[in-house]
Length: 167
Image 1: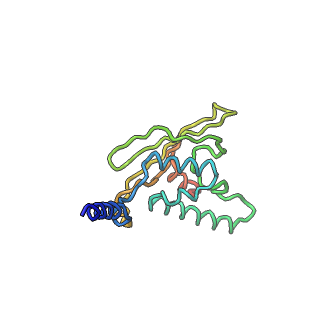
Image 2: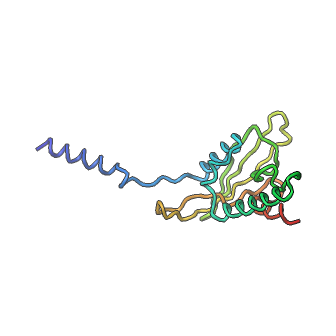
Image 3: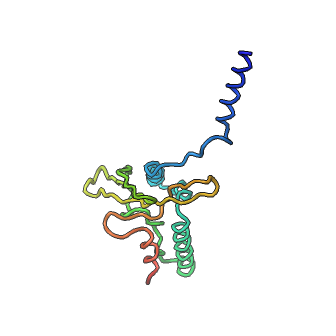
């Protein structure tokens, strides 16, 4: 009878750790910032695309479509997004990107992203990722998504995407 009880306990333990009983793990604002920094340092924002709100994805898609149309109409000229999406305040490549402090406010969070230029420390700056909790029906839980980037000097990504084509 001891074996049966041990086998039943083991079965229950294995069953409760199976995917059907496992809780979905969502990433924290700090981790979103970490993915963002890795993408910036690698100069490849593809890993960030899945971490954007629908609104920011739409704003980027609209801006890219307008940029493509301008580039086709005027192939010799540099289009407004000729340097790519303005993910950070300064267009220069920063050799350092570090996640700073996080401020939480109900369903919003702000994550400091500190850019560093080791050879030119006076050029260092800190932008902020503006996150919001978004319901994800596929996992049945809210997840943190990037809704905007507030620039260190002034302005933000969503405004920059619109104003690039205001002329």
